Image (tube, rainbow, N blue to C red; front, top):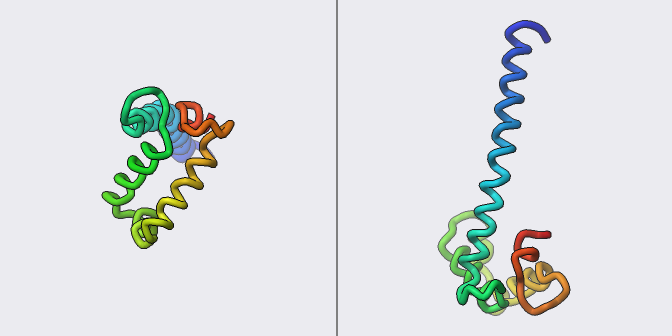
Amino acid sequence: MTGPARSKALSMAALVLAAALTAAPLAQARVQGNFDEADANHDGRVTLQEYETYVTNRLMSANGPRAERFKQLSPQEQAARLQQRFERLDKGHKGYLDRNDWNGS
């Protein structure tokens, strides 16, 4: 690749790299914000009840395929799915999620 084609390819690569570098902090901030929203009593822990309330509210107000599938489940199936997800996230089986659990650390 030479001349303008190479210059264009390098410019595109720079844009992709810049987007990746700026998106990471934004994604991290969004995840932390979600933790703060889910932590209803602001004690630094998200209990199963807080998690269920937070995720259910978000899924019920969303329109994507994942949300639509969730809406088709019975309330018992919804609760079971949320509990399974909560248990997978809860490292050390503490009975709550902390920021490390939430962020996947």
